[in-house]
Image 1 (cartoon, one colour):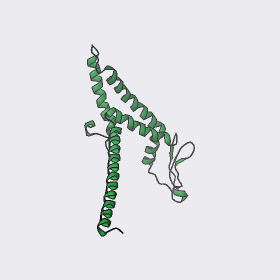
Image 2 (cartoon, one colour):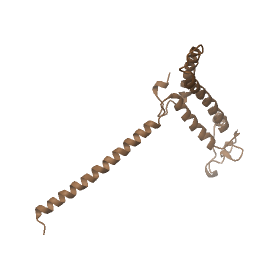
Image 3 (cartoon, rainbow, N blue to C red):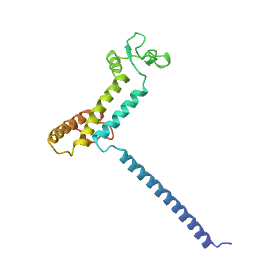
Image 4 (cartoon, rainbow, N blue to C red):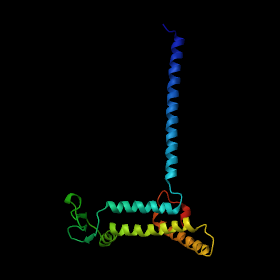
Amino acid sequence: MASEHEVQIQLLQQQIAALNERSEALARELAAAERARLADEAAKPSSLDEFLLLRIAEDEAIAVAAQSGPWSFVPDSSGDGIFGPSHNVVDPGGYNGRYGATILPQDGEHIVRWEPARVLSDCEAKRTIVEHYQYLRDDYLDEEGPDAPSVDVELEQLRWVLRVLARPYIGHPDFRDEWQF
């Protein structure tokens, strides 16, 4: 039979083993959290043009997922509706037909104006501007010769345009203060 002293030693050894296991588990959790933090940091755009292309892609994905247009707004006394070609975008019957959807005319017109086709066209225009900036920056920034000053001026003007294009995204968590005016 084990003495009381031996029992205490065994209990202490078990506690030490449990603490070591917990310590190793905490170290693994800390390492995983640090990897996740570094991956998140690496995923953040490093430049305004990268930031804009990511936001444009997000806007585009939402527009592609929505019902294609054309949409129309039809005010109605029983409930207003916004209709697409294949089904209602906003059903005048409301939730399960129990409540009429009331949309102010100016809100209905605004929603219809920003139907997916318009958003996709807007995304394409913005992407073209950003890609033109990248083309000039990557292909002509370090060029010497008679065109170099005009390219520098155009790049500076496009940087200004990119900051303007970024204004709607000021509240985004990846937006940097240095991209504001």
